[in-house]
Length: 294
View: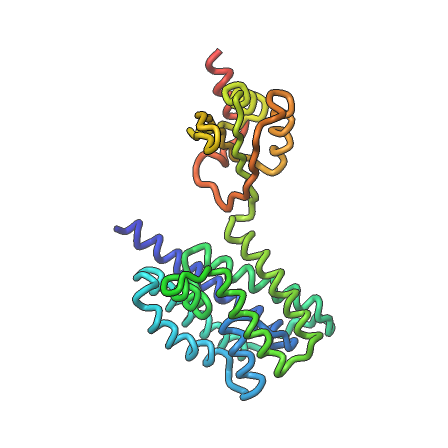
């Protein structure tokens, strides 16, 4: 139980740090350079520009009805982390608006947009990585997925697009273009932070020479492989499918092996967001094990 409590504490701490990073970039670069934002944060900027309402208050108030709607669907742990993320983000927004920190980007909106994207992506990515959310569109997307079967990505896109269009009520097209740059950068950084900063590829190989190819991958590249039993839908023939997890640079090595052992092999290369297990061990361990058997 102590270990479980410690894990929960570290997750809440990570969410707190993530919201602090996001809030700092939001105040210093979005608010400081008249850049818009998507989601509830974007709505809070509209309220600030048109009605002079502090975004930290708007962010909190707009999320309250969403939390009430999502209470029955989020799950207990997610609901607690969501509340923590919303409150923490509002507090950090309030604090950073009152701390006299000014980062001079020399009126260069491109630099401001890039920094806004980096801070937003790092902060939100950290929150997502440790199981938290900042509310807003996350809750709406979850509700629509359950109630109407609408894909989460589609909900995010529509919601953010609507907020961006509304933001044209207080910023010009030039600032909107820089906002889109910031949003693109944030999306890329979120993916990097969530994946732990490494990129992995998976290969599905359908071949009649599965044993020979698996042996070559183990001996030549130093990666293991897994057999998946399949059957051709058209032919009805049984197939042994190889599944291999590789670094991007190892993909070409496997292609060379296939070009020699089975040029007609059907291969599918997929992105792998995260690997948990012995993939991160040194490649040489297979070679060491092989030597030990001799």
